[in-house]
Length: 382
Length: 117
Image 1 (cartoon, helix red, strand yellow):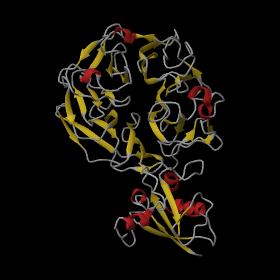
Image 2 (spheres, each protein chain N blue to C red):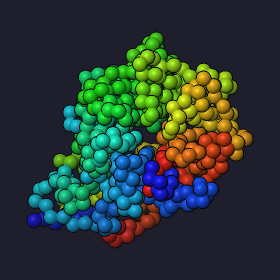
Image 3 (cartoon, rainbow over the protein chains, first blue to last red):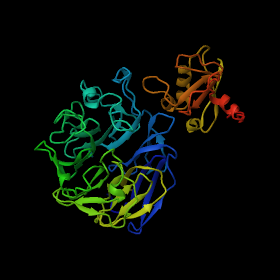
Image 4 (cartoon, chains in turn purple, yellow):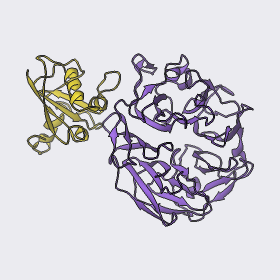
């Protein structure tokens, strides 16, 4: 983060993207005019290696998916020359027979390793992994994943997956080694590659998948959000469909740290946010995952939960949030942290509000309201 | 070369500099696929928003050639092509009545299409 850079929060919604700019030490926020107005924005991400570059994953209601890129801090946007698309010949098994595999939407964007300027990764629905080497303008299939002989076993038939489509997300690049990648798939599980995506192995041992009849399956899990800590890259955190987990990579086993959450709240949710400098501190936003999965805040009382000891204990952080009748939730890429000395947190709700905390989650206030359903929230410095 | 008039719907006009109609010169007997290739040459990126990587017309896009629905890209392009962003859903029409699409549907509810739109 440049010392003189201004903090922004990049917001992707169901009807376009917006930029919130911090003023007066994060006390006030200026909301921009909409970007890509009317488009469904799944992810809006800045390139920390080249801060004026930004990438947006977009789709319009009637039209196919695309990617928009900016090289001047979001003042001007141009469409990718070659958006992610599966190679010819790949099929998607379906109850109605084999069909050509096609990208429905680009869901997740991830800048590549610090040493590989211009490299980005994209995860799609259905589960696909793509790589760009020109700042997001042209995308190539990572065939080691998309064309893997076990793709159908890992990802399932076309009808299988979350209500809005099965997705590849949570692309994590090891800061020590550009070849070392982790991905998450809903559904499919967590997978790891040591060779820049040429080959993959499941990494789900210890993680529950209680919606699968097979006990302790090797894959088929539903990670909602997987994060690698940049200062401790062998530590992974995961908010899963079946709980909150941490893995110390040497062990190769996920430990359910969500068991320490209050029983009435549970440990189901979408996002997982890590402290940028303290690998023991992270935040989650639990949702109601009981019965028919309402996917709202638990009991209509939104709250963030924070651990400062890698999941041994959790503390409720809801000061300033509604005390009831707030039946919203926060999607997996709609909660993030900034890099300030006292870390700020930001979350976007399914009802179009952005909430912010200037004190590492201790207190919250809405800083933008009336937006469309929020899909993604990312901090940026420009 | 024969000229083909192409109606461009609102969601795709960011590619055509907001023009609602473009005119393309194509070889005689050219297919809808060839027309879309030419559109993509002139307006880069527009084809992929309508046609997926398997060469299928996307779910919410309809292509009409001289008022007839083109089921695939092999149909001849003809003199006038309308690209329609389809409204999905609804019920099957009652017995004896045909499903109305595009400008016919507008006329049915009393809306006269605007020239050039």
